[in-house]
Image (cartoon, rainbow, N blue to C red; front, side, top):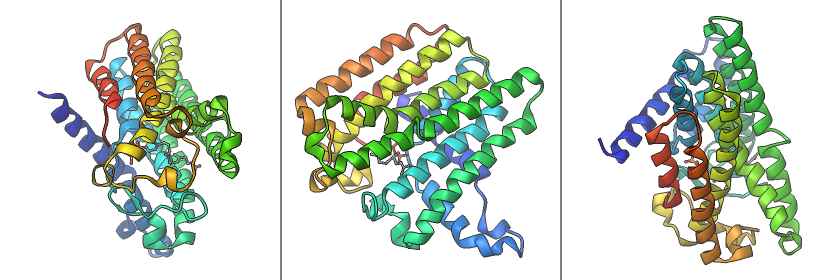
Amino acid sequence: MSFDRILAQKTALCDTVLDRFLPRPEELSDVDRHASQVVEAMRYSVMAGGKRLRPMILMETCEMYGGRMELAEPFMAALEMIHTYSLVHDDLPAMDNDEYRRGRKTTWCVYGEGMAVLTGDALLNYACETALTAFDDVNDRAESRNVISALQILMRGAGIYGMIGGQCADLEAEKDPGAADADDLLYIHKHKTACMLESAFQIGAVLADAPSEDIELLGKIGENIGIAFQIQDDILDVTGSSEELGKMTGSDEKDNKLTYVSMHGLSKARRDVKRISDEALEQFDHLSERNDFLRALIESLITRTK
Ligand code: GRG
């Protein structure tokens, strides 16, 4: 079967997992029905059809080391909920002020700004509730320990030492983009984007009780993939098509944003995506197990157009 067909099947599988874990407005009790608007907005935001890269990577590293999907699935859903909350908040007028995401109107455009803030908050909270349900399926103390480690990786990657730290530096840099240097930009990319991808690579392996050297190497692979992914995101904002990306292009330049392209130029950006991704592939080949689909997925990111 072709890579594209397998990718489509795995994306659909991630969608099914998300659909199963997300609450539904029609299933709320009479009392909880007061919360139906935020529950509807949570589903609107998550089920809008992203690439599902993070849950897919998590699923693949878990499978690669023979782990159990019952433990991985709550984490797949939780990771995508946290990723989606970050997009919902990032699109707000107080941040990037974007009107389109994943091919449709952003959450704040449809539900209003206050409800979009609450939707992001609710997704983050529900992500924790969801990941904690993995404990319902643990068979022994070793699995409990792995679930605790996975929770630590999940929450740290999303927090001040991870994604929020990166977003904070990004917002600060916006005040004076000319003052930031290449190290500042690398900090932003590593934290805002790479930390969540690192979490995806590591959590699946941790849940599957993979060797610690592999978990460490998967972190480095995730970091490289994350940096390359963000550089490609910066490139696509200049060269990509709005239809394919499902969001407006050219917004970085319009907002005078610090990006890899504005700092280093388009050709260095392209060269560096290839160089950093090749390094990740080389590291991938040093893992103790193989996963040809995951390797192909990493390769496909080098030339992604959406
Ligand atoms: C608001 C706490 C907070 C953080 C925001 C993730 C983020 C940090 C901002 C979103 C904007 C952006 C360019 C983030 C970098 C990471 C990135 C490229 C996100 C988009 O991820 P994709 O392409 O999106 O995987 P889909 O829609 O496919 O899931």
